[in-house]
Length: 142
Ligand SMILES: [Zn+2]
Image (cartoon, rainbow, N blue to C red):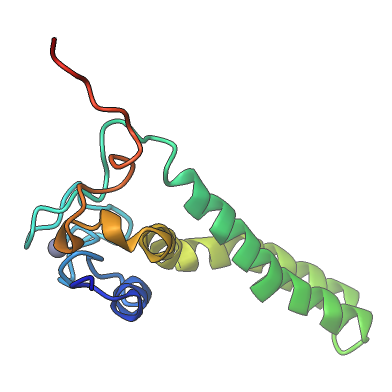
């Protein structure tokens, strides 16, 4: 039985906390958008040297949530004639710029949460070695 359960991973992800220990250390203190390389409490690596593309998924998540959570409602309100053309354009442009910025922290945290929700056994607290290390072939010495 894992030490960190999937419900704990979800709770920590939704609150931008370290998936491994639950400390509020995902983002650098005093900054809005800078992710720490490792957790200040448990040294768990948030950003690794060999997986630059990992957080591209958070961009896709951010794009999708912006589309469904912001632009689609504006489009529906315009289509149902609740708002006029000019209001719809202003809301869509403002939403397309502001929503991804406001959702940035959550998209990074949720993407990390998503990974450990699927692979909870990769968490060091659950006996794993971290993201992406479990599938790599080990180098054997002869
Ligand atoms: Zn931690």
